[in-house]
Structure formats: C-alpha cells, structure tokens
Length: 112
Length: 110
Image (cartoon, rainbow over the protein chains, first blue to last red):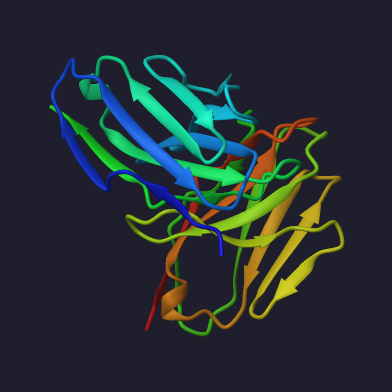
C-alpha cells in the first residue's frame, strides 16, 4: 500500500518567513510532485522531479523552490512567504512512465 | 481552450440515480487518463484508470472518446457516500506530466 506523508497537516506562518514543506514516500517512486489547491482553481502543479537532484518547473513555480536530495523525499520551500501563498499544498508520487499518482494528506498553510 | 475542462456542477441527484460526468481535453496526443475522487478537505484518491475500450469497476464505468477528446465517468445506483468531487487527469501530450481538471461536485441526497 502506497504511503505518502507530509510533515504537517496545518501550518501558520508570518509574511516574510521561510517555509519548508516536506514530503516522504515509501514506494520507491521515481516521480514526485508538489501542487497547490485553491477553491475554484483546482490542482495546480508547482514543481516536479523525475529523479534525485532533478527538478522541473510546473505551471506556477514563482515564489517556490524545491529540493530532492534523496529519492523518497521532496521538499517545497517558500523563500519568503506571502499572504497569496495561503493554500492547501499537496504532494504526490508516481512510478516512472505513468501519471497514476498517490497523494499525501496535504498541508493547509496560512500566511498572516 | 483549457487543457482539461470539467463542468464544476454541483450535480444534485437522489440516491439510486445514474449520473455521468464528462471531461474534455485539448491535446490530441494525450494517451493517459484517470479519474480521482476527492472528499471535502481530503486528498484526491485514485478511483479508476480509463482504457480505450472502456472499463468498469462495480457501479462505476469509465470511457474514452478519442475522436471527440473526452473521457466520461458513469455512476450507477448512486449512494450517499458517492458525494464528493470527481477529478479527471490527463497527461500533457507526449509526456508524463499530469494535468488535472478542476473537478465536478456530486451531491447525492436521500
């Protein structure tokens, strides 16, 4: 059974703080993804990674960066959090050659 | 035209009804399609893949129409527990980058 975990379910940060969101998967998946989900806008892809130390920009990478030092772990970094980054952040993983993804429970981030 | 489009609904149906959702995609090179279910304030969960020949899983049937570039999800004998948002996902043509639709909300009432 695939398990994707995220470091926090709820997080409250102040404007300008550096924020780290971590995601870990236990199925040896090559691909990992970070999304944000906002009402009416659906799931939007921020960054993804096909391999260790490799990253690709998604549809909305501005204001974010990522790190993948180990295959099972994919981190999303907000260098200087802003109120418009208040959102639900979802991590997902998949095997290579498929878009069949498994999601973590999400982190609801509030930036005040 | 958006890459993947869904009617947001909500579809409000009584228990026992049959309901169908469509999801249109713009890139004719897309070849990988899935349906996910998302409950309120939860993560999306894989519901079923969509094969060219169509596939069925209990009360759920998924179909692909390549000519018109849409996939569909049919739910028969709706249950209260089917109330959720249904998301379709399509690969960006020629890649394994997923693009999600915004989802269709289903409310099944007694």
